[in-house]
Image 1 (cartoon, rainbow, N blue to C red):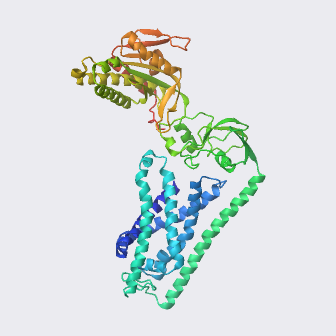
Image 2 (cartoon, rainbow, N blue to C red):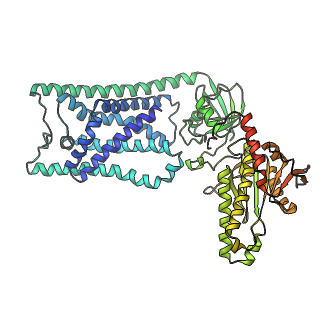
Image 3 (cartoon, helix red, strand yellow):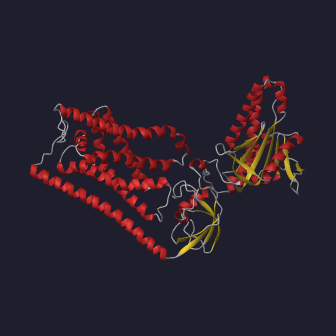
Length: 575
């Protein structure tokens, strides 16, 4: 959290600062004009404390990030962010001391005239300043991108962010170059004194020559000390890492038997992800090992000693995906004994694979609904193809809206029907009640559609709906670009068979007894029937309902009973 907060403060300052630089494309006076607006904010006491406090804390967090890493084997983006972040203070110290600190010690009022002039007068600064802009901007972009890339809205907006990310530093550098050229031209006609670094809107130091010389000596001394402090801290961290590695080599170790057959050892205290990276074994970790995703999860097949319980961050991430007890995050688990693991996500997984629709196949209890439009072939015989498509699209639009209202998930369709899932984000009882509620909504919308198209249809449209509940393998299927949440198993087969029973029973809805019991909806007033399903040794019992609307009161009673007996539940967390 602290890293994100300080990073955002610096991001705001950097963005406004570079935009200020970019105005040099227009004129140096335009740069000073915006500076007069921004300076009171950042140079005020609160602004100074927030800005430089964030800068110091963020730099220290960078050193801490270097220390906590047990191995420097990491994805390229993580390595680039770490290296650039550690390099920023080395390039930034001269700039800070040449502007804000100099302003305090020399009692001057620095403007773009003086700053740009002093940089252009120093060959070293002419190299350092553009390099600082590029490195700071790249470090900022990496941090923002890998913080936001797990959010689908951000990924969809990347086409807008990409050109902005390129244009901002480019305009800043062009503005800096343009301001320097403008100063050179003014100096050529005697309007500016570039060498001295004082412009018309700048106040020279009020100090005497002796006092100014002493102030500049203190400035150089403090700049040198800042370099020494940061370089010393960086060297200390690197030396401490080396010492820790020597100690860990002689300390306790644990072994990891990977599902690919490899056996590796790692010092106790290293996480599974750190051990796998150190051994050069590819392993998924979209968030970089911060428990902000679950792509590094593994199944623990065996452990010679009890595993440490999940910390709150890991426990929350695992709870969001309903992970089993033997599933852990490799970035958080630090075993003390030998383990045998199986990665559950391919090593090349990307952020797009974290979409809510992309779920690994796992067994869970769900309600499955099949809906089929009756006599759809009659539509094709009596109408033009365009009219048939129009009616079917309207039919599916009504079904989709009914599912959305009642918490169902549109899974697959087969031309004139579809399969929907309920209970993917709730318990089975709630999912079954929602499925029955969905059937009522579908029947109601179909009746409205028939009324609207009574003149065009001739005969009203009829649909058959079958609902069953039980265990199924639920996960995403289909092409990577267009995955769909679907289900496999006996429960799906039974639901499909029950939908076919609506033809035989000449009714709209068939609900299995198992679904009715799970939903706690009393369907005893409706006769119970049985049907044999291929692959099952026992017949399936169900209730046939001619008009789903007759279930409204029964469903309301079941909802009241559930609300009275169950404690309030938090809203389901989107996966």
